[in-house]
Length: 331
Image 1 (cartoon, rainbow, N blue to C red):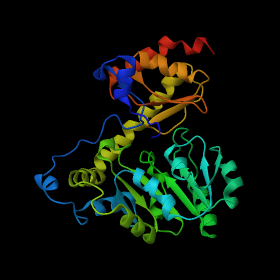
Image 2 (cartoon, rainbow, N blue to C red; image 1 turned 45 degrees about the horizontal axis):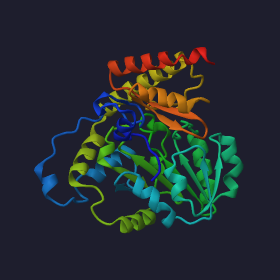
Image 3 (cartoon, one colour; image 1 turned 135 degrees about the vertical axis):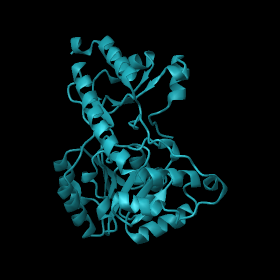
């Protein structure tokens, strides 16, 4: 299995620090999750049913009826190469590692997260796969540019696959409302913005024939009854969504400023995380872990991803740990 953030139990064992004493900033998940409502006994007792209101809530939230609920985006990521043709696949580097892993049997080309580099490849690829905003680099692209790439790919039966796991903080950049067009697939997650990673819920949006094929492949009851109840409530709660976007925007700006203050030159990323390059990334990762703060380390390029603390104590602890590293004095 590939490495992911959130391996807190392993970190506790490796560093000899009790689980409760960690500040986990390794995942990019909203540290203040949606307040889960009471779950009726019937959601536990009865088999899930498709007409329970979840589809309607998702259609309103995402702006399309061309969608399918899945147990997180991971099953869709793994199944898409079996449902989409095309020998040549272009991806960003670095990017979310599950995507190149899923497409490893195709001819893979990686490009930087610069739009000009993608543009140079667009007419020589069959599938363009973008994480948008990219994880971990945070790169974003103009909506008009994305639609142009899709148009050019679809004109020759190619595909644009976009993983929008971190886009809920800025939904105006999403292509979800374009779902249903030939050659366009959009993946969305409930785990990041809503902070409900443990629910294992997400949606795939695309042409109806692709969704039917995926539904047949995954089989019935991909989401449990309790998960469906909670996700429907979260998708309908526009008041919570608006307040959370505002709070996360401020928190993301605060994190960027804090990282700059402590010697990181170019923090990048959406509100939920910031990514920084640093030649001593591995050392910084270890030093933070020795202080009970778990962040995400990447080898290529040497870099770190910081998520958001959940409260003032967490912010103070992060500030103190970064100050102790004295990065500004070692540049």
